[in-house]
Image 1: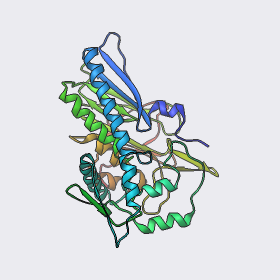
Image 2: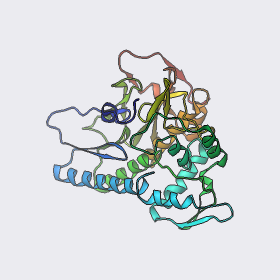
Image 3: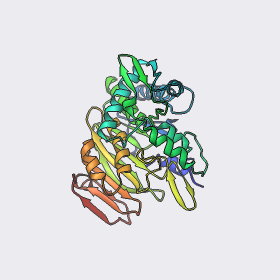
Image 4: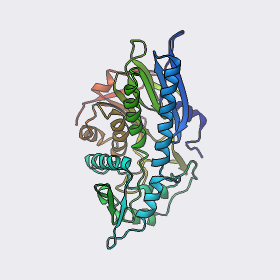
Length: 355
């Protein structure tokens, strides 16, 4: 059995390796382990005392978010999910939300609707049924009848109705799992904080979800895209100021049964792990680039080879690297021009930016 505990893949942090070269440059780099993955904050061009102070604060903020948004460890989200399970259509549960969660749930609901439900944080019970609400998991298939039951219950973000500070739901099958949202959200908050402190050149890496601020000594930050089937990079690219890069892959949290791989990315339509894709990497920009990069890679992964371009257009993403289950590599034209392939370079199909 293989799973996300592999030290090699944790060190690679899902897909991306930051290349930090240069002797005598003022670079402060600090690492921690938050959100179940390696986190690295790199600040360029600041005095060491200031760089250490701001990175310490970012990591403290990440730890607080981890405690609040973790899908199965004790915390705010786990308490909410426990209450959801008591709801019925006849007797909905009404809960006062912590202020920080109101905007998160509103945005996650909007993104879920935009993705036609392929990004669906309300299917936490399905994710748990497959054994992925754990730091380690067994190679075991769930009871198909239980999968079918949860799919028929059809938990959706629209089941969680927020009015003011109150949340109401009557669907006991709804269980929030914000694992496909929290890292990107954390990137955006960290970037906003660093800029508020006058730090304009930094790289924030949360398990391979990366957001760039400014440059590294006047040069773009260089990152590498993890190969989904071996250690090391598949390609390199330069990440520009305000851009974020995110990946969804089947090579971190997965198990195998009878030679078939089952990953943590569950297709809400059928309740089974998506199996037509190895990895999707996207680039996003704008005021919420981190969140968009984290969220949008999931529906593209689940959509698979036949529909990822249409879904990318729906999510407003132009730069995409898509690797199908058979290892076939496709890129949008906008992404292809930015990649420098590691040898041996794959055969690459250039897709139009929209279907």
